[in-house]
Image 1 (cartoon, one colour):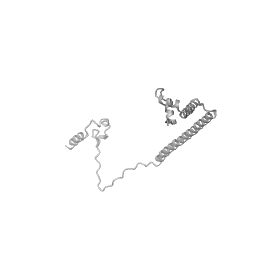
Image 2 (cartoon, one colour):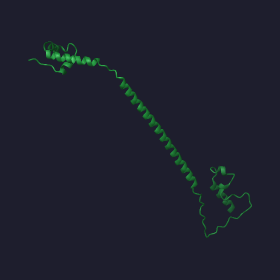
Image 3 (cartoon, helix red, strand yellow):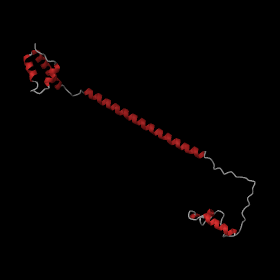
Image 4 (spheres, helix red, strand yellow):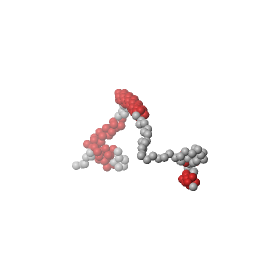
Amino acid sequence: MTKHYSEADLLETYYMQPGQSMPVMMHLAECAECKGKYERLERKLREAAVCDTEKPVTFWTRQRLSIMRRVDAQRTDGERFTRNLRVAAAAILAFFLGGAVVYKSVQPALKTPPVVISDHAVPAPPKTNDELQVPRDPWQSDELQDFHAVVQWESWVNDTKKKAGS
């Protein structure tokens, strides 16, 4: 009894190099059953290689319609997104403008500092008509106001007090 080859073995033989498939080809020359299987397999492979790969017109029409639907859907989605973005921007602008208007209308008035009333009466300094008199607060001097960072007020005030006191 001789060994018969399966379709998988014959298919493998079909794609082998001519020198490698010699034992199987020798068997095919002697066995009519395996030779018939091999010829059917070879016919199937040749028919598959010859098959038409062109798509019918209906396929391309369906593809075109599908693409156009997607393009239209994306266009309407884009328009919807743009419209929503504009509405959101207008809402944000209205929110900030409304906040600014409300802030300005409800802005608290500047409060005057509370006046401290005490029982002790502080005598007012005596008024003199001397023009060379140093002001009580050296920072109030109009001539030296630009140079307040340079002048050492403490020493100047102390020297004036010493001269006035002696």
